[in-house]
Amino acid sequence: MKRTSIFSLILLMIVLVNCSKDPNQAPDKPTLTLERDVYEYLNTDKTGTANITVTGNIEWTVETLAEQPWFSVVKKGDQVEFTMQENASLYDRVAKVKVSSTDKSLSKIIVVKQHGNTPTLIVDKTTLKFLNPADNAIVEIRSNMSWALTSSADWLTWEINGSQVKLIASANPAEGERSAVVTVNADSPIFNQTITVTQKGTVEFDINTKNVQFTKDGSSVDVLITTNQQWTYATSTAPWFTVVRDGGKLTVTAPKNDFIDQSGTITITYGTINVILSVKQAGITTGNELDKQVLIAIYNSMGGANWAGTKWNLNAPLTEATAAASWSGVVVAKVNGVDRVKALNFGAKNLKGPIPPQIGFLSEVTIIDFNNNNQQLTGTIPATMGNLANLTALTLSRSGLTGTIPVEFANLTKLSSLQMHTSNFIGPIPANVFSKMPNLNSLELRLNNFTGPLPADMATHPKKASWNFANICPQNAGFGFTNCPL
Image 1: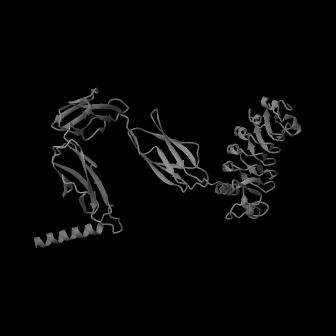
Image 2: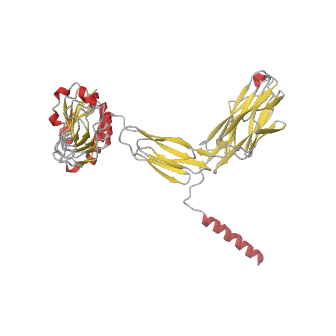
Image 3: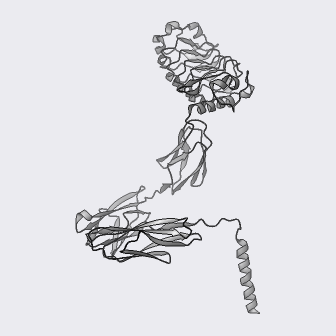
């Protein structure tokens, strides 16, 4: 009876274990890893081993790549065992071993180097990273010469047991990381080798990447931060990516980028230390496709569905031939054989809403006319319009826009006509802007909310004689220039 009860209990446990397994759970991903992939031996060494770590449900085999009469290899459990003949020559020799899964889907190469019959010093680890408050590591040093250790670091000690050296670091009281060099001195100095040891300080801060890269299609990237410090983060002014923090993880997400390459930064701060992460995303490089995406951005931002005139076909190609029928108000012309936007004739088109900053990507545009849109434009002039280096005429009259004239307009060196009258622009006129427009022979600023003096550089403008100050000086009630006309 007792045996029956025990058997029933075991059977029940087996059933419960099997039932607890998720039938939809994916099996462990097979991996094949090596402790290291290069092994060095003295000329007198005749055996050696390499540890192979296998995860997942796979078997593995081992073979020599190109037979070597002095070398053979066999598999023993989770190790590979090498057998070598003594190397009596003066020259080093190398054998290569291939470790493969039985289905050949995974493989690793081990390089086995046996030194010649010459003075040799082998140090199996030349860099060590220690934790704090204290840590140690074993280094194997093998040689056919006598050797000794030296170091100027008083926080490092060692214990030697044959070829095994135990390096010991005391606690690091400083906030920052410290480093030291241990020299392995051989009989002949030309064979000396060094071991570089670094040890964390009381402040620990590790980050898995400082460069976040996105393709134009967008995605999410996790930035992993391990530290014993309190920290915060801040993003640059670039609005194109988002950041979500979950403990020690920042998830950075970028949507699809229909425009040019873009970049930004994330600043992680702990104590007085700032760590800067670079965030970059690839964009569109072809001029025609970029122009089309800018037009779509203008359409979406400025109420395109309700514009006057022929409705746009956003799916149509952007060419000279299709512009009139599918992109009403847009002038397209060939530039170096490519169809590019040359003008936006959007006067009295019932535009409504803000000018999107992407307008600054229309690198070949020469004319922009947003005149007489019933004061329905909102917001300010995007500073990116200062990138329109080929612009010759800009009309923003009766638009409803507010804000100041961007200082970036100083880059519009080809501008010959600037019409901004009868809107809601404010503030003083920035200095050294109009003086950078030597061809500006038509300027209208009247009936806005400008104040202060006209900049002194306007008084010496080469086209001043062609300006009609009746179209510049008068402002709305309560506003006005203090020195107009010049």
